[in-house]
Image (tube, rainbow, N blue to C red; front, top):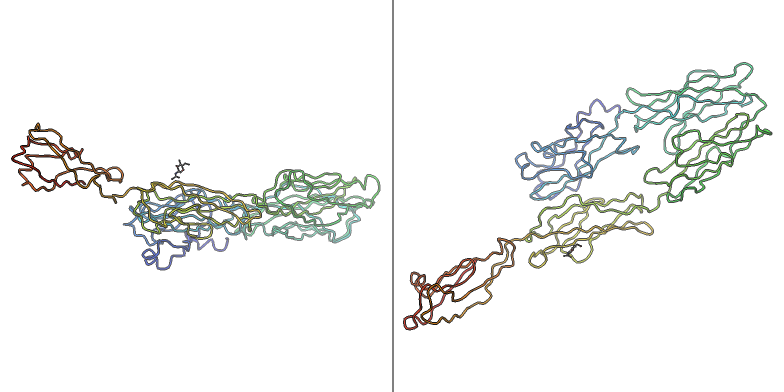
Length: 533
Ligand SMILES: *[C@@H]1O[C@H](CO)[C@@H](O)[C@H](O)[C@H]1NC(C)=O
């Protein structure tokens, strides 16, 4: 906004309170970190030092892998300093249109441990658009019998900027016969009205040339002009008169094309062709949605309407009689919201690895719900389907954390299909579900177990040396290397050196081999204790 431009610097920051305490005791900040920057900053501009504002030190950055998670890549985080950088074009008009406050909300994600932080960057308007008229010139016919104070709506200009940078007023070139009044529509936009100051006399002056200027409130202000040719017509002609100066109507957004919006009416006191009225739109811009029957004055929808795109239309109509006299009226059409958008669930961040020994309450994912409808139609609640060891916690409006809420055991359940349903409060409500598959990662939490606690082996004497005499077997339900079993002999009632001359065990297969021929007289039985790992 104009007056603040001088003291912007690059960014205005509201630092977090006690960031280091929060990083110690609080897994994530629920209050967003706020920055404010002007629109159209060049790529690479620093918005703020995100790492510092989150209480992370530069040394931690390589392990914490600070990054941003958002639907559109407007920002990145520099790996070296943890600066939040502009990485895409920030055109406020394109991102937010006419919204009075334009803020981009996204999450900063840090790993080890996984934390999410809300970031809110407000994009401020700069005066980068002048007001613009639809045409360069137009003509207005006014009867010389028109009484002073008669009003004529003139074509308005449009300015894509907001606030004081948007169109502020209209000015008319100085003249004796006309003055200009600045008027405001329902939506706050301004339009000019020409007022006749004194009677016109066609015999004295047939036409007037006026210049209309539209100005915004920027510093410096931007402007544009349009030329107006006023033609004075003969007194024995009366202009048409609309039954209302302003027509207002509400229309649900789901009406079919061709639906009647309303019918405007105009009368003319003249006779014959001078009383034949035809209707037309005056401003081309906003009329692609509607058709006008030039004879009956009936307005119908041409295309489907979308409340989420345009909430209100303001149209200026003209009634023209056979003598060329005109009258104008304004039609304001308010589009009414219908619950026609299904709420969506969007995963913002998902941990790569969920270890089976994960503690209760560990973050798994951050998810957002979105519904383009407004009011109750856009109010969404979110829930988790079925019995799963996870739960949803509200993080902030329309944002939820998915956290663990039970013991995980990969050996029992290696994966979960987690279904999240979002439902709005429309009547009837709309809902949608999203399912993700979460894989549980193995931890070496199971010891191997022998299939038998004891093996009794009978070996005939005079066996050939090197013969396999038994096989032991243990199993381990863990995965990969965690589940591989090796065997070795750890103890025996035979003395160690003697033992190795009698038997050995294959570490890999658990097969026990006789190392020599056994002699029944000499050795009747011995015991072995085997170990696996
Ligand atoms: C999860 O869904 C996939 C795909 O529908 C299916 O193949 C898999 O068996 C499901 N897993 C579980 C644990 O239900």
